[in-house]
Amino acid sequence: MKKRTKKSGIGLISLIAIVINSSIGAGIFGLISGIASSASPGAALIAWMICGIGILGLVLSINNLVLKKPKLNGIFVYAQEGFGPFAGFISGWGYWLSSWLSNIAFATMLMSATGFFFPVFGNGQNLPSVVAASILSWVLTVLVNRGIESASFINTFIAICKLIPIFIFITFSFILFKFNVFDSDFWSTFNSNISSGFHFGDVANQIRGCLMVIMWVFVGIEGASVMAKHAKSKRDVGLATVLGLSCLLAIYVLVSILPYGILSQAKLSQLRSPSMQYLFQRMVGKWGGTLIGLGVVISITGSWLSWTMIPAQTMSDMANEGLLPKIFGRTNKRNASTFALFSTECLFQLFLLTLLVTDKAYIPGIYCYVRARKEQGKYGFSNNEKKIATLIVFFGFVAIGLLALGFIKT
Image 1 (tube, helix red, strand yellow):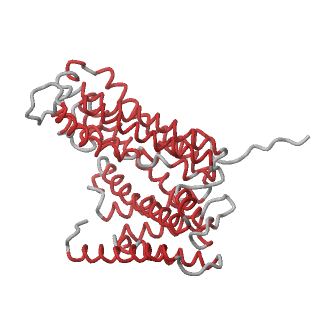
Image 2: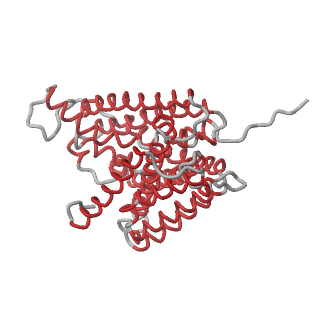
Image 3: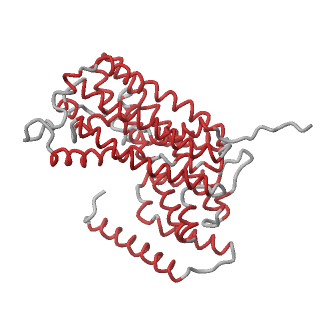
């Protein structure tokens, strides 16, 4: 009788951790002042409901695609399946670019947060910060290269660690919550000239301003789908995305709404960033600020780890689909995409030092696509692909010219 072998790969809990880790970065720690500066508690609750319904629709669509097309791996493949290889390439290349370029923000925010404990790092943009961020980035890259499964286990551990200070903050917010403070100006903002009470036009403006803040905190919700290739079960991918969204919504709503029962909206909007840190310090004392400061550092590190895995996996999947040269799909004995991982890391290091690589990001991408097509014995573009490629190159040079002339400021 044959023994049943245990299938290796990323399990449901680890997939949920990837969704949470890739979504919860530094943004949640500044969410309080960001929302309070735009909306009253009543308008904020409506904004969360609208955004939650919209993101739920996206998540259910991803879940539906995963279940109906279980053999497809990655986000870009759906564009490829529906509109052809060049559409898949544009989708994947753009996603890959945005994925690793976001790590620059993580580097700056992490060093800035560390500056709370070690002033040498200042605002996160000086030489010590660049050196420290560069070293940490290489450490994360080497860690992922040792195997996606082992990196996902560490990712799960970090996700738990980052949630502990957030849950402590939520717990104390419940304890110190005062309903009379929360209800004092439920619909009108502190900077509104309209008398207290529900006024549709004013509330609608508040909701619009609030949505501009909260829609960005769900970036990364697709993390489990990107790592679908390494999942033990494709069903776990869709379930992890839905459960991850449920956890995120609950955490975001509690973190952003409960403070309205601690301080007035006007005072919340004036808190320094990260507002959760300074609010908790005001609530319980200095240890609260220190705890949230550690949470910021852990949270950003966890997100950075997730966004080290995701772009490399995207590049590897694109190579396996014939959208990039085959070399980008090479894996080591631990099934990690070594070439894609280290080539992405080298670009990150270059951008960290020069800030020049994004100006021409799509042009070398199109070259890679052409190389991949030649490897498959397919030469040139179709007529539609030629038009799209020409537009991309043209507008790329227009953007460079506008930057050089000062019409666009970075």
